Length: 356
Image 1 (cartoon, helix red, strand yellow):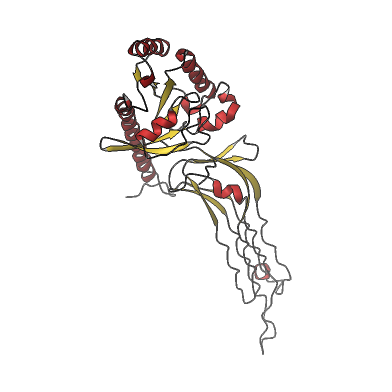
Image 2 (tube, one colour):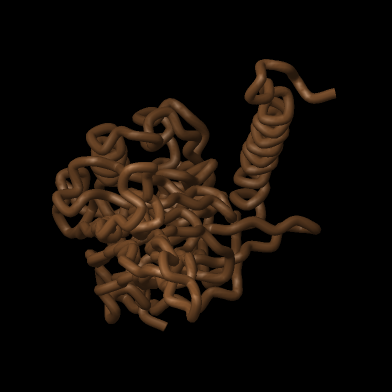
């Protein structure tokens, strides 16, 4: 299935049904009076985050989504049926922006998150509502409320525990294919990966999700090479693994390029834990590994793990380091959810009293 992480769609709620003018007409009932029913309410447009989806491809090929209209009122004081809400299912991690992408309308970051984006029109009033002591036969009704409409942009940010970063051809796809069942395209040239990939990584008795994004280039934080969209996919990861191609001459320059783009992008990437891996060490001598590892540790100020995605050397060490951080991040997220749940239960009722 093709991966689509951004698309623009048109949505429209349902208009309300009209109220009608009607009078009771029965034999031997000379003055039956008004009995025009109200119109039904139009359907809302609701977005819901669900598990099992990881692409917005359905919305790429169907761009117009319109909720149904409310039914018109009928005689005998019969109210028209209200239309069902249109529930649009999107992957967890979907953000909804206005058409110009200037304002974030909603962020569906958790399974089950919902947002009502457009309200359906109210049903119109039948002539029964306008009966008074001086006007026993009103010939007045109101139309249903108008529908709301707008263009929006859906943008997906993948939800993963760990994210892979690096320049093109740093060996990220090879690493992901070794540690998970993912099958990304692998070749000996830059920009082999053109779409983000997800893989479930097994470490001892544990599992976590890792995201591999296409290689970043200088200027990615400003949108060069779709960099802002790619960086968004690792923005919510608990930890980042920065792989550096050990076979290149300037490993320090490679490190500085990626870190500079992360700082320029900002957002949730600022201050996020990062593990640095010197990759492709199977092609280096022991002296070269020692030298380049020392260079990276000096420029980064943190330990560097030598590894090889091809031979597997050093991979368990990297996974172990990742899991230690992911374990703490998952525990913190769980504690935050439980705290939110407790706060929700302790909220006072509408009368200002807490439930017993």
